[in-house]
Length: 373
Image (cartoon, rainbow, N blue to C red; front, side, top):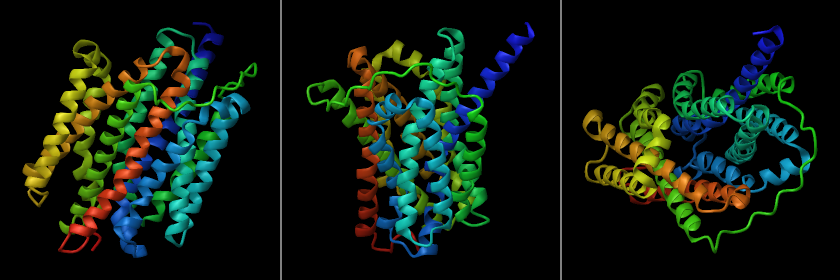
């Protein structure tokens, strides 16, 4: 390998590290705040309905910007949009860490969700142009996806540790990380050689019945999964009296199905088909939710909480991968750039709608007192 080739290889890996690092940062946002919700609620005196907006607000911002991302990139360029979103993410993190009330705190979560809606798909698009088609690009996409999958696990561990020093660090820590990645990325992310024509405006998938049904299914799956994690977090830290760190460790098994199945999701779909995996993936969470209702989580973690986490987590991963592939395959290639963001928006709206419903049900039907106590 010549000196030029070695330098090019180092540049390629450095670029991938920056893009993947930002993907991890985006992916940690759900689990970072999830573990901190009971602590923030107690400290600021927030109700369940208010504190849940720290999660659903992020999903709302994510959903709002997803359909417009391709048009912004076409108008301003991927590089500008990517780094602008990273800067916005860092500033919102600082504002969240310094917020003295729920309104500003929730607003920063919405902004961070909007920024993540731009950086996550934009990073994948940058990989598509920076790496030549073939094994090198496939390897880069695999690494990028693996970092994203690891983000939820990293968020749980980091959140449990940071909460020992105070919940504000949950919001402050991502800021310097984002700024370091931004400054490093300015040297690595390639400039676009030519302007691209504006992307067509997103079209609602009213006539695409398969895409519509798939979007509704994925939205329900995502919303109920977020609701379960919300419920278990307050159950363990509230009623069971676990510390945030112990509660974070107790949620780690939710990551096991993701870590195990992500490398094989594509081959599973090719071998068994999307229909079977969606059906199997829907049955497993249903069993998990019925188990949670029949035998509510208690201090018997191994026999009650753990089976629920594993069943729902496994079903979520299997169904979600199959639903994503069915959504992509239901529209012609010429329309995927506008149809898939609408599908992904529907997925996020599932959390926006079902998290408040979960919080309301917990408040309305908990005769012992909401689990914030």
